[in-house]
Length: 241
Image (cartoon, rainbow, N blue to C red; front, side, top):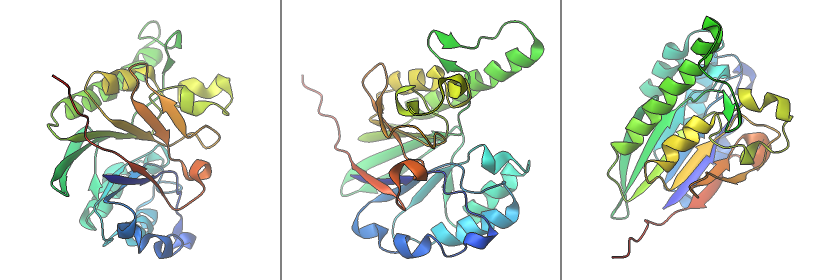
């Protein structure tokens, strides 16, 4: 299975038509296209229409999660509705399944959130604001795990905006790691037999990483991959008896 992915395209109203030429032939290279959030600059409905025009009616299914920029205007539901109305699958604690060349692919997605990583993370203790911050991550990680567990497919992919591991953040200032992802997302990936985890958000990070359980993690923020999308080839895992 050929999984195309990109995140952090940050399309504004002046970017209409910018990506479309590179996307028209995506079906020659991939079976599905995953969008890892921050599709808009400021989360406006007008920008959402630009994103929809760029990614609608492609020769492969398009699956997206929203990012923090897509929430900035406090109209995330409307942004999601615009994309859905144009045929994109927008996930938040949900999953979608596809049949590809006789095999099944499942994609579960969430925006994700921050909090940090093992040994250097926040906890649900102290002020109400801190408990709310970490509690949001706990809730979202639980949604991701539930969505992944519900998938009974040959290949399983986790799609998010925030990172599930620190590996793909290398290059970013360590001081902001807690705002770029959470180990709880990685635990959800490791607990569910997932084959690949895709994220964005870290513009100065690194493409390749692994969860503690050995699941491949890929940072597909456009400033990292430096292309309209990148492609990963996956095969169903063979379980030996």
